[in-house]
Image (cartoon, rainbow, N blue to C red; front, side, top):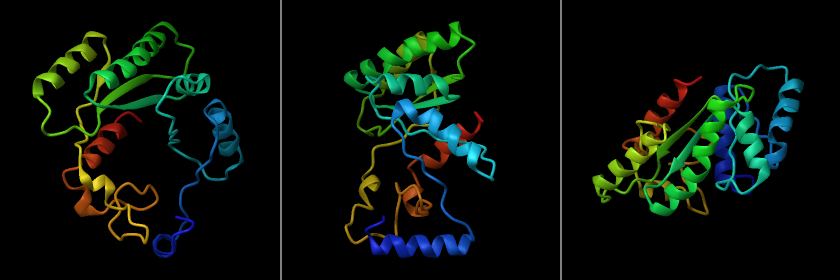
Length: 192
């Protein structure tokens, strides 16, 4: 956004109309994320109800694991493919067992959710994978995010008024329809 004049002016207009600035973003390596968040929060005058951590998609990093165990809730997107399921479950199952065995960690629960579900996928695959997830005592959210071209709508170099994945701006109402993003946010908000 910093180099795109369209989004810069759109941001200025939005924040002037709201009478406030955007939420702060603190960049950190995974192994430093908890400490950086705590340091930031201790220096802020405003109180925060929620802190989001956007972690890399791989757990093959010791920093990701320690951060994972130090936060309250983890929401894990997954695709209904054998490769995605195997890589996700190979970490989530032991992490879930740690939650049950150790009450001294912050992590309260892990919640899986289907992401980018292609409407052409056979329901039997989803049913099979859901059975595996439940067999291991894992939590599967009710909301699934469908595969859609709307995720690429804002990929214009000049900028677009209809944004969907841009985290600073509200998602365009027409693009939200059928995305289930609003349902996912509602379901996640029940955990706080």
